[in-house]
Length: 144
Ligand SMILES: [Zn+2]
Ligand SMILES: [Zn+2]
Image (cartoon, rainbow, N blue to C red; front, side, top):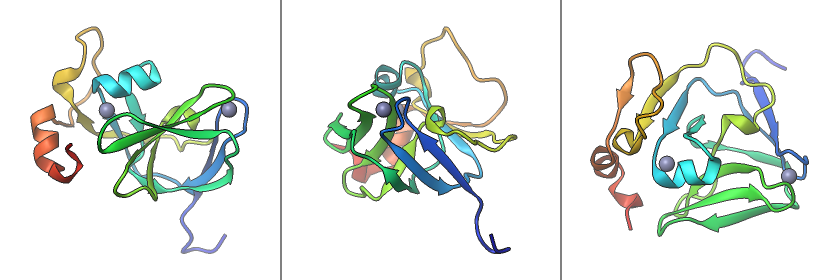
C-alpha cells in the first residue's frame, strides 16, 4: 500500500455470498427511523454513503422500501446490510454489522430521525441529532 492510499475495510454477510471492500470510514452515522429499525432489527449504524466494490454478490437483492430508497439484503442467509438512494445508486450505506475489520475509535457523528427513536434506548455522548422534519429539510430531493 502506498502512502496516499486510503486504508480499506472488508465486509460480508453471514453466508459470505455477498463480499465487498470499501475505504475505511472516518466516522459513523445512526438512523432511528421506523424503516431502518424494521429492516435491521435495531437502529441503522454505519459509515456515510460510499463506493463499495463487490467481490461477490450472487445473493444480493434490493427491496424498494420507499419512493426514494431501497435496501439490500442477502437472499440466502437473510443478512440486512445496505441502504441507497434510488437517484444515486452507486453510493451505498452499509451497516457496521457487515464490516469485519472496522477500525477502533470511530464515533457517531449524526443521529437521524431522533424523534422516531423509541425511549427504551439512548446513545451516550453529545452530537448532532436531527428530527424527521430537519432531515427532510436537508434532503428535499429524497422525499417522495
Ligand atoms: Zn448471505
Ligand atoms: Zn432510517
